[in-house]
Image (tube, rainbow, N blue to C red; front, top):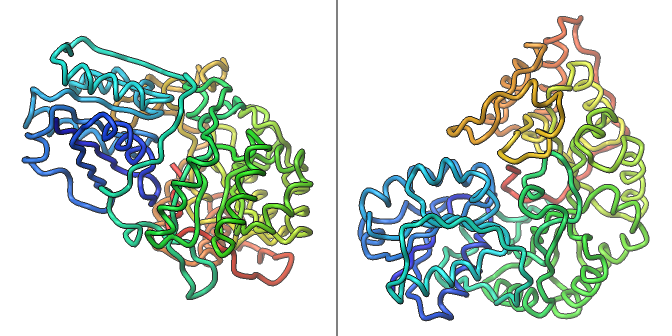
Length: 448
Protein backbone atom coordinates (compact mmCIF):
# COMPACT_ATOMS: atom_id res chain seq x y z
CA UNK A 1 0.00 0.00 0.00
CA UNK A 2 1.34 3.44 -0.95
CA UNK A 3 1.91 6.03 1.77
CA UNK A 4 2.93 9.62 1.00
CA UNK A 5 4.77 11.44 3.81
CA UNK A 6 5.21 15.20 3.38
CA UNK A 7 7.45 17.66 5.19
CA UNK A 8 7.03 21.36 4.50
CA UNK A 9 9.66 23.00 6.69
CA UNK A 10 11.95 22.00 9.57
CA UNK A 11 14.28 24.99 9.92
CA UNK A 12 16.64 23.87 7.18
CA UNK A 13 17.06 20.36 8.56
CA UNK A 14 16.53 16.99 6.93
CA UNK A 15 13.13 16.18 8.48
CA UNK A 16 13.49 13.88 11.49
CA UNK A 17 9.74 13.47 12.02
CA UNK A 18 9.17 12.18 8.49
CA UNK A 19 12.22 9.89 8.73
CA UNK A 20 10.92 8.40 11.99
CA UNK A 21 7.42 7.91 10.56
CA UNK A 22 8.91 6.24 7.47
CA UNK A 23 10.83 3.73 9.61
CA UNK A 24 7.71 2.65 11.48
CA UNK A 25 5.56 2.40 8.36
CA UNK A 26 8.20 0.57 6.32
CA UNK A 27 8.48 -1.98 9.11
CA UNK A 28 4.75 -2.64 8.51
CA UNK A 29 5.40 -3.23 4.83
CA UNK A 30 4.27 0.15 3.53
CA UNK A 31 5.56 1.49 0.23
CA UNK A 32 6.59 4.92 1.51
CA UNK A 33 7.35 8.01 -0.57
CA UNK A 34 8.85 10.99 1.27
CA UNK A 35 8.63 14.52 -0.11
CA UNK A 36 10.24 17.57 1.50
CA UNK A 37 8.86 20.66 -0.19
CA UNK A 38 11.43 22.90 1.52
CA UNK A 39 14.00 21.63 -1.00
CA UNK A 40 11.94 19.80 -3.65
CA UNK A 41 8.76 20.55 -5.64
CA UNK A 42 5.42 19.63 -4.04
CA UNK A 43 4.27 16.03 -4.47
CA UNK A 44 3.20 15.25 -8.02
CA UNK A 45 -0.37 14.48 -9.04
CA UNK A 46 0.67 10.84 -9.54
CA UNK A 47 2.23 10.57 -6.07
CA UNK A 48 -0.95 11.96 -4.54
CA UNK A 49 -3.23 9.78 -6.67
CA UNK A 50 -1.38 6.55 -5.80
CA UNK A 51 -1.41 7.07 -2.03
CA UNK A 52 -3.96 5.43 0.23
CA UNK A 53 -2.59 7.45 3.15
CA UNK A 54 -1.23 11.00 2.87
CA UNK A 55 0.38 12.25 6.10
CA UNK A 56 1.91 15.69 6.62
CA UNK A 57 4.31 16.52 9.43
CA UNK A 58 3.39 19.79 11.19
CA UNK A 59 5.94 20.30 13.98
CA UNK A 60 5.79 24.10 14.05
CA UNK A 61 3.88 27.20 13.04
CA UNK A 62 5.51 27.85 9.66
CA UNK A 63 5.30 24.18 8.67
CA UNK A 64 1.56 24.13 9.39
CA UNK A 65 0.81 27.20 7.33
CA UNK A 66 2.81 25.78 4.42
CA UNK A 67 0.91 22.49 4.70
CA UNK A 68 -2.50 24.05 4.02
CA UNK A 69 -2.30 24.36 0.20
CA UNK A 70 -0.83 20.84 -0.05
CA UNK A 71 -3.72 19.42 1.99
CA UNK A 72 -6.24 21.25 -0.20
CA UNK A 73 -4.60 19.93 -3.37
CA UNK A 74 -4.35 16.36 -2.04
CA UNK A 75 -8.03 16.39 -1.05
CA UNK A 76 -8.98 17.61 -4.51
CA UNK A 77 -6.84 15.13 -6.48
CA UNK A 78 -7.41 12.06 -4.31
CA UNK A 79 -10.53 12.37 -2.13
CA UNK A 80 -10.38 8.62 -1.39
CA UNK A 81 -7.06 8.86 0.43
CA UNK A 82 -6.96 9.13 4.20
CA UNK A 83 -5.49 12.49 5.20
CA UNK A 84 -3.44 12.75 8.39
CA UNK A 85 -1.42 15.48 10.08
CA UNK A 86 1.09 14.59 12.78
CA UNK A 87 3.32 16.66 15.04
CA UNK A 88 2.99 19.35 17.71
CA UNK A 89 0.68 21.60 15.70
CA UNK A 90 -1.70 18.87 14.48
CA UNK A 91 -4.11 18.60 17.40
CA UNK A 92 -3.56 22.24 18.42
CA UNK A 93 -5.10 23.31 15.10
CA UNK A 94 -7.76 20.67 14.73
CA UNK A 95 -10.57 23.04 13.74
CA UNK A 96 -8.60 24.37 10.78
CA UNK A 97 -7.29 20.97 9.69
CA UNK A 98 -10.68 19.27 10.08
CA UNK A 99 -12.18 21.95 7.87
CA UNK A 100 -9.64 21.04 5.19
CA UNK A 101 -10.72 17.39 5.27
CA UNK A 102 -8.00 15.90 7.48
CA UNK A 103 -9.47 12.88 9.26
CA UNK A 104 -6.62 11.90 11.62
CA UNK A 105 -4.64 14.26 13.86
CA UNK A 106 -1.74 12.89 15.92
CA UNK A 107 0.45 14.76 18.39
CA UNK A 108 3.05 13.67 20.91
CA UNK A 109 4.41 10.20 20.21
CA UNK A 110 2.76 9.90 16.82
CA UNK A 111 4.49 6.82 15.37
CA UNK A 112 2.25 4.15 16.89
CA UNK A 113 -0.83 6.11 15.83
CA UNK A 114 0.40 6.22 12.23
CA UNK A 115 0.99 2.47 12.27
CA UNK A 116 -2.50 1.83 13.70
CA UNK A 117 -4.02 4.01 10.97
CA UNK A 118 -2.05 2.21 8.27
CA UNK A 119 -3.23 -1.17 9.55
CA UNK A 120 -6.86 -0.06 9.54
CA UNK A 121 -6.57 1.14 5.95
CA UNK A 122 -4.82 -2.09 4.89
CA UNK A 123 -7.56 -4.15 6.54
CA UNK A 124 -10.32 -2.06 4.98
CA UNK A 125 -11.71 -1.17 8.40
CA UNK A 126 -10.89 2.54 8.45
CA UNK A 127 -13.78 4.99 8.57
CA UNK A 128 -14.09 8.69 7.85
CA UNK A 129 -14.82 9.37 11.51
CA UNK A 130 -12.39 12.00 12.83
CA UNK A 131 -9.58 10.77 15.10
CA UNK A 132 -7.67 13.11 17.40
CA UNK A 133 -4.94 11.59 19.53
CA UNK A 134 -2.31 13.07 21.83
CA UNK A 135 -0.14 10.16 22.91
CA UNK A 136 2.55 10.42 25.58
CA UNK A 137 3.01 6.65 25.72
CA UNK A 138 6.54 5.37 26.26
CA UNK A 139 7.65 3.64 23.10
CA UNK A 140 10.67 1.84 21.74
CA UNK A 141 11.96 4.17 19.05
CA UNK A 142 13.26 2.91 15.72
CA UNK A 143 16.24 4.28 13.84
CA UNK A 144 14.78 6.85 11.42
CA UNK A 145 14.66 5.83 7.75
CA UNK A 146 16.41 8.59 5.78
CA UNK A 147 17.05 6.82 2.45
CA UNK A 148 13.96 8.33 0.82
CA UNK A 149 14.82 11.91 1.78
CA UNK A 150 16.91 14.48 -0.13
CA UNK A 151 20.63 14.29 0.63
CA UNK A 152 22.19 16.29 3.44
CA UNK A 153 24.00 18.49 0.93
CA UNK A 154 20.68 20.19 0.23
CA UNK A 155 20.07 21.32 3.79
CA UNK A 156 21.56 23.88 6.17
CA UNK A 157 25.21 23.58 7.08
CA UNK A 158 27.16 24.63 10.13
CA UNK A 159 29.55 27.53 9.56
CA UNK A 160 32.53 26.77 11.79
CA UNK A 161 34.65 29.72 10.68
CA UNK A 162 34.71 32.20 7.83
CA UNK A 163 34.88 30.09 4.68
CA UNK A 164 34.61 26.78 6.58
CA UNK A 165 31.26 24.98 6.42
CA UNK A 166 30.36 21.40 7.30
CA UNK A 167 27.40 19.21 6.40
CA UNK A 168 25.02 19.11 9.34
CA UNK A 169 22.80 16.26 10.43
CA UNK A 170 19.93 16.42 12.90
CA UNK A 171 18.51 14.07 15.50
CA UNK A 172 16.53 14.07 18.75
CA UNK A 173 17.53 12.48 22.04
CA UNK A 174 14.35 13.44 23.89
CA UNK A 175 10.88 14.76 23.10
CA UNK A 176 8.77 17.14 25.11
CA UNK A 177 9.98 19.23 28.02
CA UNK A 178 9.52 19.16 31.76
CA UNK A 179 9.11 22.93 31.92
CA UNK A 180 5.96 24.99 31.38
CA UNK A 181 7.07 28.23 29.71
CA UNK A 182 3.83 30.03 28.88
CA UNK A 183 4.61 30.87 25.25
CA UNK A 184 6.09 27.50 24.25
CA UNK A 185 4.12 25.32 21.76
CA UNK A 186 5.53 22.14 23.34
CA UNK A 187 3.62 22.77 26.57
CA UNK A 188 0.00 22.31 25.31
CA UNK A 189 0.96 18.83 24.07
CA UNK A 190 3.43 17.49 26.61
CA UNK A 191 2.28 19.39 29.70
CA UNK A 192 5.62 19.27 31.50
CA UNK A 193 6.56 15.72 30.49
CA UNK A 194 9.29 14.41 28.23
CA UNK A 195 10.26 11.11 26.66
CA UNK A 196 13.78 9.71 26.23
CA UNK A 197 15.05 8.09 23.03
CA UNK A 198 17.46 5.28 23.93
CA UNK A 199 21.10 6.11 23.33
CA UNK A 200 21.80 3.32 20.86
CA UNK A 201 18.93 4.44 18.64
CA UNK A 202 20.20 8.03 18.69
CA UNK A 203 23.75 6.89 17.91
CA UNK A 204 22.52 4.66 15.09
CA UNK A 205 20.74 7.65 13.56
CA UNK A 206 23.90 9.74 13.91
CA UNK A 207 26.00 6.93 12.38
CA UNK A 208 23.89 6.84 9.23
CA UNK A 209 24.08 10.60 8.82
CA UNK A 210 27.86 10.58 9.26
CA UNK A 211 28.05 7.85 6.62
CA UNK A 212 26.04 10.23 4.40
CA UNK A 213 28.63 12.97 4.94
CA UNK A 214 27.56 14.82 8.12
CA UNK A 215 30.40 16.26 10.20
CA UNK A 216 28.17 18.08 12.65
CA UNK A 217 24.98 17.04 14.46
CA UNK A 218 22.25 19.34 15.76
CA UNK A 219 20.27 17.92 18.66
CA UNK A 220 16.74 19.26 18.33
CA UNK A 221 15.51 18.51 21.85
CA UNK A 222 13.53 21.43 23.33
CA UNK A 223 15.96 21.11 26.25
CA UNK A 224 18.93 18.75 25.97
CA UNK A 225 19.37 18.74 29.76
CA UNK A 226 15.83 17.69 30.65
CA UNK A 227 17.51 14.34 31.31
CA UNK A 228 21.07 15.36 32.26
CA UNK A 229 22.35 11.85 32.96
CA UNK A 230 21.07 10.66 29.59
CA UNK A 231 22.66 13.69 27.93
CA UNK A 232 26.05 13.15 29.59
CA UNK A 233 26.18 9.52 28.53
CA UNK A 234 25.10 10.37 25.00
CA UNK A 235 27.70 13.05 24.27
CA UNK A 236 30.46 10.96 25.85
CA UNK A 237 29.47 7.99 23.67
CA UNK A 238 29.21 10.17 20.57
CA UNK A 239 32.70 11.59 21.14
CA UNK A 240 34.24 8.16 21.68
CA UNK A 241 32.56 6.90 18.53
CA UNK A 242 33.19 9.93 16.30
CA UNK A 243 35.81 12.20 17.93
CA UNK A 244 36.03 14.42 14.83
CA UNK A 245 32.29 15.22 14.76
CA UNK A 246 30.97 18.41 16.37
CA UNK A 247 27.46 19.09 17.64
CA UNK A 248 25.14 21.74 19.07
CA UNK A 249 22.35 21.56 21.65
CA UNK A 250 19.57 23.70 23.13
CA UNK A 251 19.53 24.19 26.93
CA UNK A 252 17.54 26.47 29.26
CA UNK A 253 19.30 29.25 31.18
CA UNK A 254 18.33 27.74 34.53
CA UNK A 255 19.74 24.35 33.52
CA UNK A 256 22.99 25.95 32.38
CA UNK A 257 23.34 27.47 35.84
CA UNK A 258 22.24 24.38 37.76
CA UNK A 259 24.51 22.06 35.78
CA UNK A 260 27.37 24.50 35.22
CA UNK A 261 29.85 21.80 36.21
CA UNK A 262 28.89 19.91 33.03
CA UNK A 263 29.82 22.72 30.64
CA UNK A 264 33.44 21.49 30.27
CA UNK A 265 32.06 18.08 29.24
CA UNK A 266 30.16 19.73 26.38
CA UNK A 267 33.27 21.65 25.32
CA UNK A 268 35.54 18.61 25.50
CA UNK A 269 33.18 16.33 23.55
CA UNK A 270 32.86 18.63 20.54
CA UNK A 271 30.00 21.01 21.31
CA UNK A 272 30.39 24.03 19.01
CA UNK A 273 27.65 26.15 20.54
CA UNK A 274 24.67 26.03 22.87
CA UNK A 275 21.39 27.69 21.93
CA UNK A 276 19.41 29.04 24.87
CA UNK A 277 15.93 30.55 24.69
CA UNK A 278 16.63 33.66 26.77
CA UNK A 279 13.55 35.37 25.27
CA UNK A 280 13.91 38.69 27.14
CA UNK A 281 16.15 40.68 29.48
CA UNK A 282 13.25 42.46 31.17
CA UNK A 283 12.47 40.61 34.40
CA UNK A 284 8.76 41.51 34.18
CA UNK A 285 8.47 39.92 30.72
CA UNK A 286 10.44 36.87 31.86
CA UNK A 287 8.03 36.45 34.78
CA UNK A 288 4.98 36.70 32.48
CA UNK A 289 6.50 34.06 30.17
CA UNK A 290 7.32 31.89 33.21
CA UNK A 291 10.86 31.35 31.93
CA UNK A 292 12.39 30.41 35.27
CA UNK A 293 15.36 32.78 34.99
CA UNK A 294 16.18 36.46 35.37
CA UNK A 295 18.26 39.03 33.54
CA UNK A 296 21.02 38.52 36.11
CA UNK A 297 20.93 34.76 35.46
CA UNK A 298 21.47 35.38 31.76
CA UNK A 299 24.46 37.60 32.47
CA UNK A 300 25.91 34.92 34.75
CA UNK A 301 25.53 32.31 32.00
CA UNK A 302 27.37 34.56 29.54
CA UNK A 303 30.22 34.85 32.05
CA UNK A 304 30.26 31.08 32.60
CA UNK A 305 30.49 30.40 28.88
CA UNK A 306 33.36 32.87 28.47
CA UNK A 307 35.22 31.19 31.32
CA UNK A 308 34.66 27.67 29.95
CA UNK A 309 35.34 28.61 26.32
CA UNK A 310 31.97 27.70 24.82
CA UNK A 311 29.84 29.75 22.42
CA UNK A 312 26.40 30.77 23.68
CA UNK A 313 23.70 31.51 21.08
CA UNK A 314 20.79 33.29 22.79
CA UNK A 315 17.39 33.47 21.11
CA UNK A 316 14.67 35.99 21.89
CA UNK A 317 10.97 36.71 21.63
CA UNK A 318 11.92 40.31 21.14
CA UNK A 319 8.53 41.95 20.65
CA UNK A 320 5.75 41.23 23.12
CA UNK A 321 2.74 43.25 24.32
CA UNK A 322 4.97 44.37 27.22
CA UNK A 323 7.97 45.45 25.13
CA UNK A 324 8.73 49.16 25.00
CA UNK A 325 11.03 51.03 22.63
CA UNK A 326 13.21 51.85 25.61
CA UNK A 327 13.20 48.18 26.61
CA UNK A 328 14.25 47.19 23.10
CA UNK A 329 17.14 49.63 23.23
CA UNK A 330 18.07 48.21 26.63
CA UNK A 331 18.27 44.73 25.07
CA UNK A 332 20.55 45.99 22.29
CA UNK A 333 22.70 47.86 24.77
CA UNK A 334 23.12 44.78 26.94
CA UNK A 335 24.01 42.57 23.97
CA UNK A 336 26.68 45.06 22.96
CA UNK A 337 28.05 45.34 26.49
CA UNK A 338 28.26 41.55 26.75
CA UNK A 339 29.90 41.35 23.28
CA UNK A 340 27.08 39.16 21.95
CA UNK A 341 26.34 41.00 18.69
CA UNK A 342 27.88 38.22 16.59
CA UNK A 343 26.06 35.58 18.65
CA UNK A 344 22.56 36.72 17.65
CA UNK A 345 21.02 36.08 14.22
CA UNK A 346 19.28 39.20 12.83
CA UNK A 347 15.85 37.57 12.83
CA UNK A 348 16.13 37.15 16.60
CA UNK A 349 16.00 40.93 16.95
CA UNK A 350 12.72 41.09 15.00
CA UNK A 351 10.63 38.15 16.27
CA UNK A 352 7.12 38.92 17.49
CA UNK A 353 5.32 36.85 20.13
CA UNK A 354 2.97 34.22 18.72
CA UNK A 355 0.00 33.13 20.82
CA UNK A 356 -0.94 29.74 19.34
CA UNK A 357 -4.03 27.71 20.13
CA UNK A 358 -3.83 26.26 23.62
CA UNK A 359 -1.07 28.60 24.77
CA UNK A 360 -0.61 28.93 28.54
CA UNK A 361 -0.46 32.67 27.96
CA UNK A 362 -4.23 32.54 27.52
CA UNK A 363 -4.53 31.63 31.21
CA UNK A 364 -3.55 35.22 32.08
CA UNK A 365 -6.45 37.74 32.29
CA UNK A 366 -4.24 40.46 30.79
CA UNK A 367 -3.55 38.31 27.73
CA UNK A 368 -7.21 37.34 27.42
CA UNK A 369 -8.04 41.05 27.18
CA UNK A 370 -5.49 41.86 24.49
CA UNK A 371 -5.64 38.69 22.37
CA UNK A 372 -8.13 38.57 19.53
CA UNK A 373 -10.10 35.54 18.39
CA UNK A 374 -8.02 32.73 16.93
CA UNK A 375 -7.11 33.47 13.32
CA UNK A 376 -7.21 30.21 11.30
CA UNK A 377 -5.08 31.74 8.56
CA UNK A 378 -2.32 33.16 10.77
CA UNK A 379 -2.69 30.19 13.19
CA UNK A 380 -2.54 32.40 16.26
CA UNK A 381 -4.49 34.82 18.42
CA UNK A 382 -3.68 38.28 16.97
CA UNK A 383 -2.69 41.15 19.21
CA UNK A 384 -1.72 44.79 18.77
CA UNK A 385 0.68 46.72 20.91
CA UNK A 386 -0.72 49.61 22.91
CA UNK A 387 2.10 51.75 21.49
CA UNK A 388 1.87 51.69 17.66
CA UNK A 389 5.54 52.68 17.44
CA UNK A 390 6.50 49.25 18.77
CA UNK A 391 4.55 47.39 16.09
CA UNK A 392 5.94 49.75 13.42
CA UNK A 393 9.50 49.11 14.57
CA UNK A 394 9.01 45.34 14.56
CA UNK A 395 7.60 45.38 11.04
CA UNK A 396 10.42 47.60 9.79
CA UNK A 397 13.02 45.29 11.34
CA UNK A 398 11.37 42.19 9.89
CA UNK A 399 11.53 43.74 6.42
CA UNK A 400 15.17 44.61 7.03
CA UNK A 401 15.99 40.99 7.86
CA UNK A 402 15.37 40.13 4.20
CA UNK A 403 18.46 42.18 3.24
CA UNK A 404 20.72 39.35 4.45
CA UNK A 405 23.17 41.73 6.12
CA UNK A 406 25.98 40.76 8.42
CA UNK A 407 25.04 40.51 12.06
CA UNK A 408 27.02 43.61 12.94
CA UNK A 409 25.42 45.63 10.13
CA UNK A 410 21.90 44.56 11.10
CA UNK A 411 22.57 45.30 14.76
CA UNK A 412 23.77 48.82 13.90
CA UNK A 413 20.67 49.35 11.75
CA UNK A 414 18.38 48.10 14.53
CA UNK A 415 20.08 50.46 16.99
CA UNK A 416 19.49 53.44 14.71
CA UNK A 417 15.92 52.43 13.76
CA UNK A 418 14.91 52.05 17.41
CA UNK A 419 16.28 55.51 18.18
CA UNK A 420 14.41 56.91 15.16
CA UNK A 421 11.17 55.48 16.53
CA UNK A 422 11.57 57.39 19.79
CA UNK A 423 12.25 60.58 17.84
CA UNK A 424 15.43 61.14 19.80
CA UNK A 425 18.55 62.88 18.65
CA UNK A 426 21.00 60.93 16.51
CA UNK A 427 21.65 57.55 18.07
CA UNK A 428 24.82 57.54 20.16
CA UNK A 429 27.36 54.93 19.09
CA UNK A 430 26.75 51.56 20.71
CA UNK A 431 29.75 50.34 22.63
CA UNK A 432 30.92 46.72 22.50
CA UNK A 433 32.71 45.02 25.37
CA UNK A 434 35.56 43.79 23.20
CA UNK A 435 36.73 42.59 19.80
CA UNK A 436 34.32 40.37 17.95
CA UNK A 437 35.34 36.84 17.01
CA UNK A 438 33.59 34.40 14.69
CA UNK A 439 30.73 32.50 16.33
CA UNK A 440 29.81 29.08 14.84
CA UNK A 441 26.23 28.94 13.62
CA UNK A 442 23.88 27.13 11.27
CA UNK A 443 23.31 28.71 7.87
CA UNK A 444 19.50 28.59 8.38
CA UNK A 445 18.79 31.21 11.08
CA UNK A 446 14.99 31.00 11.32
CA UNK A 447 13.58 29.65 14.58
CA UNK A 448 9.80 29.26 14.30
